[in-house]
Amino acid sequence: MQIGLFPNESNDQTLEKKRLDDFAVLLREGKTIFQVVPNIQIQRWEKVVWNAAWNSLTTLTMLDTHAWLGSSADAIPLTRRLMAEVIDVAKACDVPIEYELIDRLISKIQAMPPIGSSMQADYKAGKPMEVNVILGYPVRKGRELGIAIPTVETLYVLLAAMNVELLSRLQ
Image (cartoon, rainbow, N blue to C red; front, top):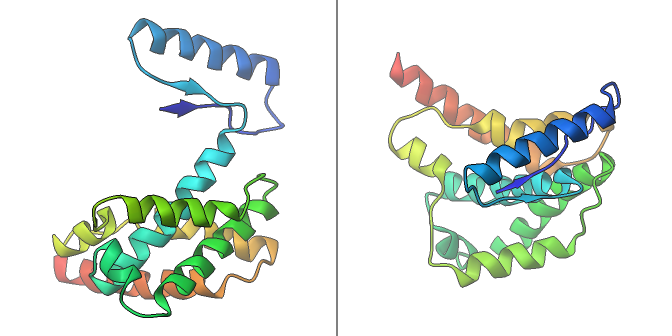
């Protein structure tokens, strides 16, 4: 587990640091394995890049990660473009995240056994999907900051439509 401070200039940074330190003490006492990181936004956005890619693509295709990546000559370039757009939004939010993350995440997924995603599992189980949690924030921030993210926006619209259809079946 990684923890850190969420940037909020309206809060007293000394007080926020003390709160973080106090929380870390409690975690240590509870024998929780964790790491305090200086800029939690880096890890947060790395997770957003991961989730935006694998949750979206495995759900829309109903393929596992390896089947998706091997499905056509266009699969990896599309995955890379999607990840790069999320990184564009992170960079516009002043998060120091690099595009080399794309290579690391693709290599990481290729080294793992093929997997589906939590979003895909939710859809298959007829449960509401976390479309807004996984894609909504990068879409909203991208629009707010004027960042062109056509791939992310397209996947968001498609998955939101699937979610509406799924929710209508639940009623």
